[in-house]
Length: 173
Figure (cartoon, rainbow, N blue to C red):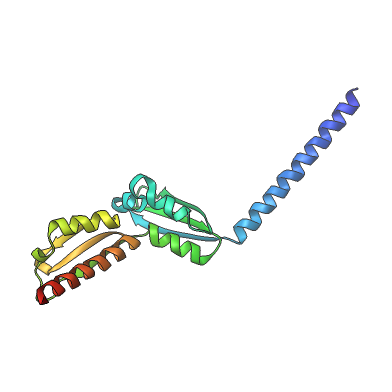
């Protein structure tokens, strides 16, 4: 009968509302316990932050404790995009930021070195091994400009120092 049907619909709506409220509370608790980190990256380094085929985003999202990692367009008047990381801890957010944040660093030549001491093949190999965006030779200032994620630039500096030590060892032998 009609009264029974209306009563069933009413109780079904009450159950749905209770489930929705329970889900809202769960999401609210998750958000309250999360760390949200946002930072700007320039438009021209956005591809570097994303990585080949989204590799950097995937790597950041695979960190234990990272819930979300995305890049959003900023206002058209700005020349940056926004990286947003949501994580369960500050440590997880910091680890993801290290992967996503873009970095420009420099490697200075020693007085006894010349830019030609580091062959293009060696530099290309370092770019390939570390997933850098690029290495620029700044001959006038006797240094290399290294552009990539913080992780990639740190690896590149380590490899350049190792290459320097190898060359020094070869010269002394």
